[in-house]
Length: 415
Image (tube, rainbow, N blue to C red; front, side):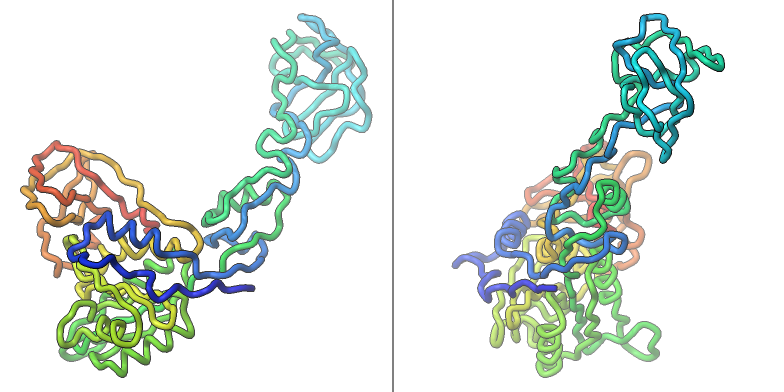
């Protein structure tokens, strides 16, 4: 097993004079600044679902390895059969896993079942429904062309071709494809080890009694990381003290490949995440022209990429989907992952001001995108109500019901 090198300390640096960063510029900067930080290992194919290929999968053998029957019927040499054929039958039959023992002579036919290897001498199959059969002969109208009802060798894949590319996250269907071409092991990226930390004196653990705010961010971000196949390093909650946050950073630098924090990403008195990264690590605090969101602390700590998200759960969720998830996909070896978007009619009206790209909690009903009743970023219930986001452009927009809008389903983010 091998692990890849860490990031350079200046990977997130913005050009001089950059202030408010448009969403598309921030995404492009991330895409061009990052590289995979995971290593590689070989593992049994049967255990590899959800893992990311570190090398292309090359077919060990063709699928199917030999020509076989697509139907139940009778196999014969096309060139030796007249248009209205009556051919003598050879003894026995060909069945899946039980090939015919002898070749089919010219001017003869044999019984064959679906999946059976084509016997030598035969190249075409006629459906049994089109045949009249006696104990010794079969009669049928000859198919229009040779090779009818036969699956040729290598129809699905030829030996030596690439069947799956490097960077693909393996699905159940991929395991079937790889197995069918003779592969038993695959080289995959080691799982991205993702550290998750919440910060803030106001936070309490779920289920705890007393004053405080339950930490909703950590379970949300853990689930997001797990959905993309990451191994989670849960760092819990850190109080608003530099020593506690520094200790969490030091632990993450040893145990993880990337880190997500929530809270402390701006420039206030208690924003220790951005201050620590600035004074002891490397940071570029981006003010993103996005709603909900804005402050996004991107930095490194001993070469560990750190994504500092806002503490508000709605803003943290949106920023995690739009900025962090494609970045983590690239870091994990799967490449940059742009979400699949769809143009759908709006079921709402809105007058949008220019200056920020907006993401509205939304879902599709009756073929139209409806949005949550409030844009308040403190309403966490809108996240579970929603099934996706409506993506509104940076520019001013007047939206009336029926106008096309850009819709990003959560499934496009692997959720």
